[in-house]
Length: 398
Image (cartoon, rainbow, N blue to C red; front, side, top):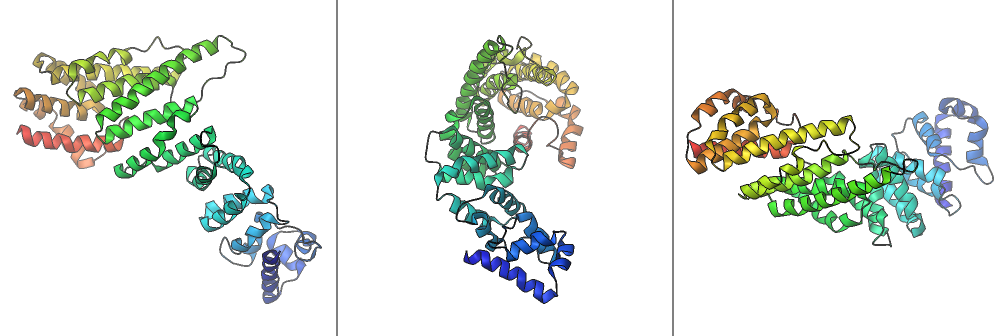
């Protein structure tokens, strides 16, 4: 109890320096005089909550987290962890960035690995509240200490850390992917679908087309299985509970075909890529579509139209060029990838597109001047990549 005495001694010292009585300090903190007295003079002393510690700190004009290092022992007041103090303390520590105290508490908790489910539950609670960064130390604790290597809890923790690691840095994204991949098949179906879509998109941004194919295939197969299971479960309306995913289920199904086709196209396998367009061109038959799902079906239908024209142009069908140009005029968000296709085809099949480039010159200038490339449904990293590639291909064309 040495540190517990020390934390109280520190408070008592500050009271004497400030000339406070229990009554006056109780008024300064908003704490009841009797409660405050019990904290310092009780036998045994009444445990201090982290909220009370913060009120004392504020009243004494110390920065947030004052005496938090000493407060760690307050969480283990009689040698055992008291979750009513441990949980608020851990949350406050991550909120103010005091990871040192988080590590101290977690280290003591991990002396008994039976606390892992509780730590995981706290991480999940923070994640559901949208506090992913705050949840990271607790997911890391589970990853480092989980004794059951095939547990769903471990796989979910790896997945959440993977999600937290994804950003605009492609090298870091690849590192995160490689750490996570071994755990993907241990995830529950909802996370598994999200994970496969993220993996395929990251490899797409890295131009690793075979890997895109691999995870697009996995995504398509899993989405098909999940869809069939959902249809069966809906028959028992009293027990049916819809699978919770980041996106509507139809997205994972359609994206499995879309990403596969795009990866084949980018390897020059145009005829084979064309075969996958029918898989997402008209998904109105998909059962259980809500309003958002119907919007996604229309978006996939739009991409199917774009990709069909795209492939025809790439295969040298100059007769499809006018149709493609008209399509791009009606769909401004498709102009950048569409122009890239047209330029590539012109280089490969040696025909002039000067009139097309003149018609879209203002669009190219706007991309350059505003650099508003993160608008719409395309992600920023692949869009910037396309923009750079367009200018490279234009240089070759000219």
